[in-house]
Image (cartoon, rainbow, N blue to C red; front, side):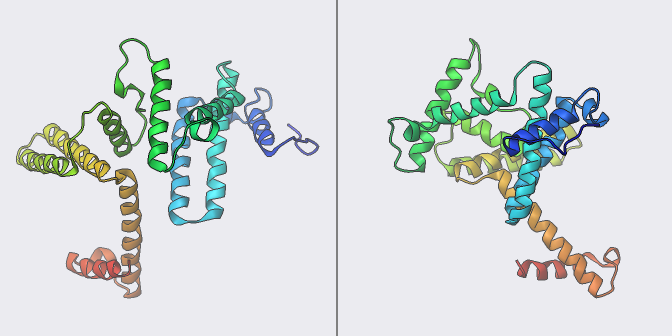
Length: 269
């Protein structure tokens, strides 16, 4: 047993780091925590990031405070495992990102000027490209740095943005929309066949083009879909509540009855 009662800490962060060290202690730690590795913890890390996004979407600050703590725990968890393997420490992670932020903000910490956010974006990209050039090895490709583990819509947007900086870009959003229309037609043609592989391929092409058009219009496809999901949950839950008030089992209602109630929910926002 590890006694935490008389322990003193120089900061809340040091307390959290100590707690994680205790959880991973080989003699007195938690059996579950000791069994974990980077891959087994990864799903929890992704889940916590999405729960932060959910709290922000709902505008719930108490939940956001808690979810940010859970996300911070994930960072501490990974760095503790890395320290155990003599790979890197939490301090190295923190110092690394602090130095990176200083490097990428010469308009704050250096002698460059940035009058607006567009100028900041340009400076950020320049600094990032300089860093990537220093890291890159011979034969590296433009899209290598786009993380494989990102959600598909977000990764598509990042891939497209990265490729566009080489000049591989439609001249305007209308041209991108024309390409989307072409892909919709090809998807409809694929649906006429029984080839599921081909249908899936064309569906992917269509979704990729939707993301590209959205990006060129300054829209975030991942955020838009997340909001659409939340809106659907709200309206469908309202639909269920309405049928409960009528004492009608929803699975016994006709589609037309459901759509009538659905349209009423849409009017509510």
